[in-house]
Image (cartoon, rainbow, N blue to C red):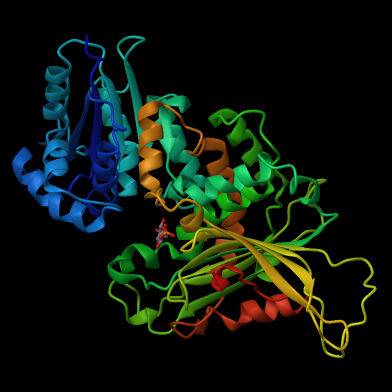
Length: 487
Ligand code: BG6
């Protein structure tokens, strides 16, 4: 007996995300034999397409963007799953054709449905509402299910995120809602938890007794490209900090959950956010540096006098027993020198050094670096004796782990593969809960307001971002670090 049908309905099917990420990831999952046989994929958007035309549009994009092999045979077999229905979720009766299609395909069986909102954010609420109005939000029986996957951005501040949660939760229960942060789908981000909680070696040191400070850098070499209009209303805080950087921070800082489950992980992440102070306007201004890359104001869709930051560096603290007194320095920007996401843990220096160092030589104290991308790796920096010197000399050595050499046969997949597979399987561990999203905005709101009041410092394209960020760290005798680039 075949299982009840599962349908993945993609709203916004003619958009970029569908062509570049969702379909290539689903195709790859299919190639690996990880999609349930009974899964159909139904694209929905306003443009009219036949199933055939829709598949033909997706084939070249999949070929171009898939991480891994592409073959015409496996595409043909995958494409059989893909269908298309034109629909306008914003209009009354706009989902009637979709409803009819789903009801027909399910043939009265308890169908399972995943609604993926890959649409403009102002449509999230209306689509959730429309789905409920058409009787498509509640599962008709216990075996059936309905899930709603929502892309970022989830709100643009705390108030809008709260309002959106309220609307969505009028129509769907919290456990039906899967809010995406694609950083959580990255293998190396999940590996932070494995590294911390599946080893005994590091956790005893993972606190303010041994750690001087933490740095989290997400630098991108790309500019805003064709997304100038979106980006100019968003800026680096809404685009990168509220979600990706703060999520990375929670993985570094959280306590060990009892189990790897959505509820326990969300609780621990929320505790980290709860321990982070919400800055006053004055504190926010003191703890941030903002920059804008040269030429940004000439980008398509960007206001000629825009003050939107394309780079920022922020200092956070986490006021709990583990982290009290350990600054977390976060920075992110576009049009920078490197594409690099890295977490650096700077350990404290030894309390006393018995080795006389030659004049001018400073001791490099232990550092650990988790390279999230592009060279997925971990580096541990420690001191060694340089052999055969007249006097004692110390030098840093790097102990390295690289995914590509340790797992040569398992290339790192696209993060959407993990997230889609989990959403189909009903595992929400790597998705964000309503409370943590709202709290993350609460933390960011004063920083966004402070940035809006300041004039961003211009930085050169291909640089390390605003020089003010270097000066900021130098004030406490520190500097931005990267160990990833060694590899
Ligand atoms: C997205 C942002 O969420 O993340 C983009 O909207 C950014 O501006 C992207 O470029 C970065 O993701 P990744 O996976 O390339 O680091």
